[in-house]
Image 1 (cartoon, rainbow, N blue to C red):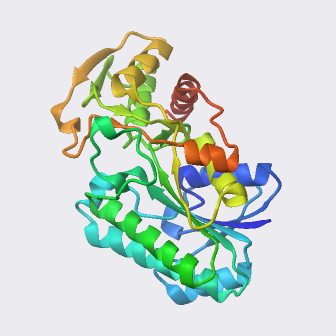
Image 2: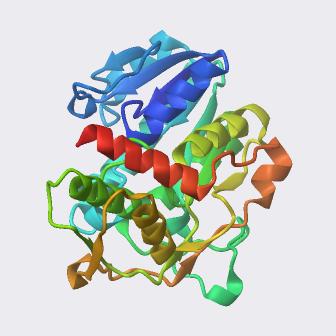
Length: 315
């Protein structure tokens, strides 16, 4: 199968292109010039630079020329906190960019499969007594980012129902692993530990809210889930992508400290608390398991060890 991955140079994109190549697909990576950096390896992937999602003519031409059988749409403005400051950029990129991509896919006349990657943040705040969260729950997005992802999903529904495209969409929960930027909690902790080990910082880690519990999944398992949805899922359905279990941020920190080769002290930093933090976020992934046969391969400890080793190499 000929697969086009938008945002191929991003955190999940790099792992997804590897997964698709590994199972025998031809992979094309659509990359914005500003997001393609030296040191990022996309071995075996045909990289197409310069097709901006907001340039409908250039994007349409690129998709028509590439003629993919499946499109994995990962490119997005993807930081929920930053979306509060950059709301217009978030909405334009994630909504208009998705519209342009779906229209380009439709215009090929070949009805390629399209996976739209969304977020569990589309559900908004959910009481602990009503979790794990299933796909049947109403969406109540709270940030420009989550609004854009809910809107993206509605666009996908319209093209599925009236445009003849086999569209799938995910509501993905937290994921982490090798290659993640340090603006996310697991990677932030791992980087700090690696820096302490190398003597690049004082032997202490600065943390925010440690009591929150989250559904963390390895990014490599996420990549496998996305592939499984396109190959075995049902078009027109939403799929939660997660582990289906929640762990506290405290447990994440404790595991990384346990894996460390040095003693580390923990310092609470009030500036690292987030206004929209929820005490618990965990997904019901039974639909994903039932429809695709997918299951996680990596334990949380394995993921965190690989993440820490990745930062040890990067530092």
